[in-house]
Image (tube, rainbow, N blue to C red; front, side, top):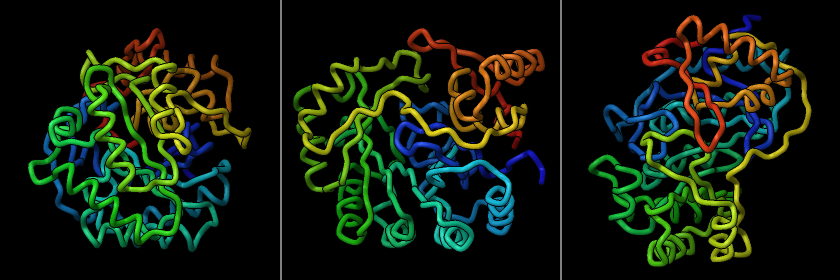
Length: 318
């Protein structure tokens, strides 16, 4: 089989899902939000229009090859470089995955289209939903998530609440906290009120440990996150650091595999080495060569160097 994955990437170490085999079913930055903390940068044009985005049969064939020869994974995670619920083929993609493998399917979503019955029906085919909620009031929502003009925090919360009534599987709600944006007592109370209405199985608190769309975004400390988690006790946890992952089969260290990871999010050398199951020195050597070719850019966040693809390189599908 070709060593180059076009739609899948990883498995990568996930703070929430162990070893996650990612599936990207949206064009780069096709999204309904323009979040200030997004690892992929600014959203050029926000949209809420659903449409077919990728050839479903290509995804199916690629997964068959990966399952027959590739590394093990705890989840197949539909996410990537855009909002996956904007893809009208989501249901067919999930059904095809389940016909090929018993690996559970997770969907990471920004929650904005959950007010739509067709989106909720598609998402209900997954084994796990990982939606996000960063605010409980409209002003904070617009400040942090900068949504499409037809999306409101009320629509988002009501959509997730409706999905909870329809979906028997687990819902792990991510709340992304940014110092000075959504951490006042009143803002946290509003979030808690929304969480009570949504009734997720878990509340997972995150913060800006990776490079964000805006350079002045700063993370909360671990202790601050732990203190806030007590507000949502007993089903709240802090997920701001990578979790240890089980050892699996190693993935070949190639520039294509590295680009496939970096296209979806900035990574450190440690992140890449852990995902590919290889020595950091091997990764460092490949990254140095890729930088010489102008494929990468670097940034330092919290004292850690992260690598991402260079400007306009996202147009290349590794």
